[in-house]
Amino acid sequence: MSDTLDTRTASGLTRDVAPAVAAMARMLAEQAGARAVLFYGSNLRTGSLEGVLDFYVLLDGPPEGGIWPRVSYREWTFAAEGERLALRAKIAAMTLAKFAEAASGRLLDTTIWTRFCQPSALVACPDPAAREAVIAAIASAVRTAARLAVAVGPKSGAEEEYWRALFEATYQAEFRMERASRARSIIELNREHFTGLLPAALAAQGLAFQEDGGGIAPEVPAAERARIRRWWKRRRRLGKPLNLVRLVRASATFEGAARYAAWKIERHTGVPVELTPWRERHPLLAAPGVLFAVWRARRQTRI
View 1 (cartoon, rainbow, N blue to C red):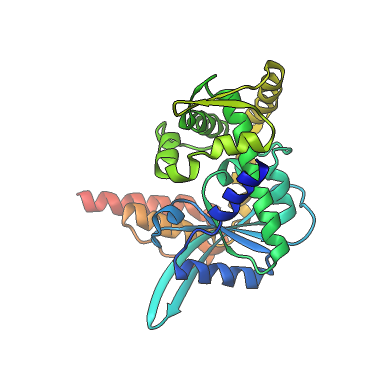
View 2: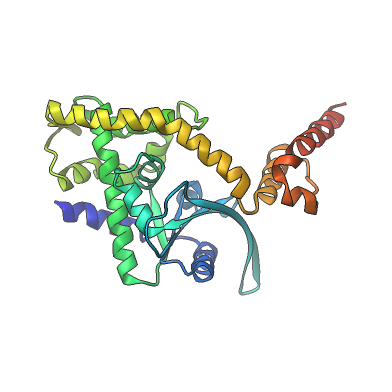
């Protein structure tokens, strides 16, 4: 049954992406010397090139310590057959070894396995060995998520109830401002991906369950359920502090942060932000002045 999850994972990672996305992924892989590049997020589901594309660039080397991944913002023009498309992307970079370690659930971090039990596409991977490693890591992320899903979900119920319980729990543990409907929308918008995924993930790790009339009843021993809950309690308690540390670190190390913020402000307010050299070098120091200028510009348009 482990092959069932591995097969699903390998197939899912071959999702079609727009030629522009594939080209940008190859460019990122070549420039970083990456072993693999994953594409994920809402743009993968919709196929849209609007907004900010989300990539994970997985590098060679041993698992890094400290706070990871390193995040950057990139604007790039895709040109092919007379067509020119302006793309924007948020790029997270970390070693493939650390990615696999985080996906396994052994670390306190929750961000990798919660995101990559959701759909993703392996859009650049020149190394066959790296491809196998990525497939194994993604399958591990699904197994990690499934264990928590049966521990926080109902004793029996529809499969989507377990996934919804999982995402509600993990969003509450992160430093995020998600609407209550977010967990439900993830499942509804990716129904094909999640249907049958929980049984495959449970079977892959030897956790028994019964299926009846479209529902599922995991047969997790009380001691094992208690162990999973203890594992989760620690991660839930440290989730927000870890996320806050990452946000603070990103504010100082996010390459292209000023350009990213300027684009986001204009997109959401309609007010263009002049990106001076000083503002680009010191985005945190510039933020109060920028926000005041945006507030004043919007106030004047309402007068």
